[in-house]
Amino acid sequence: MSVELILWLFSFASVMVLIGLTAYQLICLSDLEYDYINPYDSSSRINAVVVIEYSLQAALCTSFLLTLHWFPFLVMAPVTYYHVKLYMARKHLVDVTEIFRQLNGEKKYRMIKLAFYFCLFIITIYRFDFKLSFLVNILWNWSIECIHFASANFASQLFKNT
Image 1: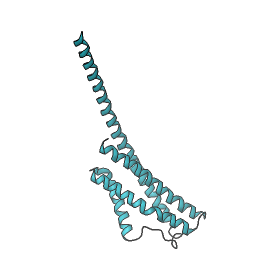
Image 2: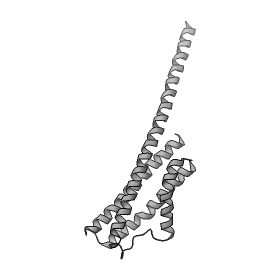
Image 3: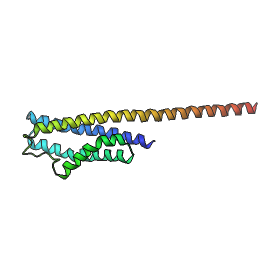
Image 4: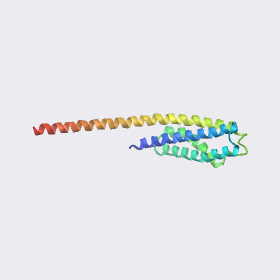
């Protein structure tokens, strides 16, 4: 299997997980807003997935850099830099005591990240489809050549014996 195909499969799965994690955080904030859960539960649920999201996005950005896919890397680099900056400043976690004051800002931040991840998903789907169709085309042409070679070889053996 092609390294690029594996990269785009990893990218597809990673972006789906990133969309799911961001949607989960948004749901937790909406549940808090409508008073379905308390602030402690909401912040602990969000804080449990933030580091996973940041590390997965950093791994995806690094994989694009290492495989020399510049466009996806340049799209993801500013967000990865922002996440690293938040993590180093210890501002990546949601504070239990400040969550109601920051609720609207946190929801807007998660909505923007969700839109970003959807755009990244569209890029990934396009590139994955392009790579998969290219690989299928190569395999199809190879199988046709094998069939032609086998039939030509069979025909030459058939006429040789008669």
